[in-house]
Length: 251
Ligand SMILES: *[C@@H]1O[C@H](CO)[C@@H](O)[C@H](O)[C@H]1NC(C)=O
Ligand SMILES: *[C@@H]1O[C@H](CO)[C@@H](O)[C@H](O)[C@H]1NC(C)=O
Ligand SMILES: *[C@@H]1O[C@H](CO)[C@@H](O)[C@H](O)[C@H]1NC(C)=O
Ligand SMILES: *[C@@H]1O[C@H](CO)[C@@H](O)[C@H](O)[C@H]1NC(C)=O
Image (cartoon, rainbow, N blue to C red):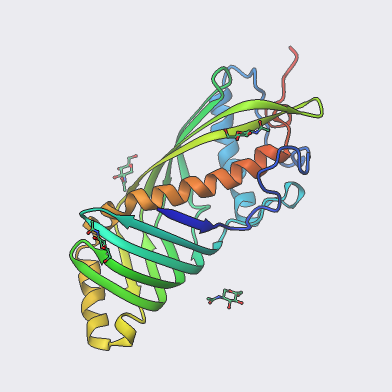
């Protein structure tokens, strides 16, 4: 369903211990034995917001605002929708405009879960697409601009502790993302070889049926988000030792 050359938004990919750094001093830390660990994490998520935007040089995390995905292809084939789309320079803004509703980390099971809300996310990209969404044929190549959202997302991350050179790291083994997307507003240029009338009619139909369309396309978008989070987690927890992220407090 998804084939992706996903973002180089991290410099260090998929290998444990490939940079091995401590978090920068200005980064919040939550002690693993803090009885209010979840509150600490909730605060930390708000504290790191500016760094989500700017990136964190020291540990190789590139800026998320905007997030640019060089290229990926998505296909979905079922009764509701049947399409293949390839994008270039897929640019998504507003990722740092999140609100964390719930956060839960269980140090025993190593399972992390969170519920987050995002505002409207502006998107623009070059695209090539063929197929249909609901009953609307969509064929074209060009520029697309859209506004997606608001979006509610739940993210569940599972992992295990692995050791490299006597130091423990969190190795993410599974990520599940569930999204509830309110709506999409979309303008596609270059539809049907640039046919103006067909382009106008298609855009108008896409927007009239936008709620159904976004509902039908949500599984593909969830899969995209899972791939992105996996890349991010591999880089982040692969370069910062587990007990640097969650220090043990002696008390
Ligand atoms: C999807 O489109 C392809 C190519 O047009 C077609 O062969 C296939 O049967 C379609 N699948 C569904 C479920 O409509
Ligand atoms: C994507 O962006 C890069 C850098 O701005 C540019 O060189 C490239 O031509 C763009 N690709 C497309 C398909 O627009
Ligand atoms: C991390 O988990 C992945 C997926 O389960 C696994 O393939 C990989 O071997 C693990 N890495 C280490 C260093 O254990
Ligand atoms: C997101 O959740 C809030 C409640 O926290 C709800 O009011 C809102 O309608 C939800 N939005 C979407 C797009 O599901």
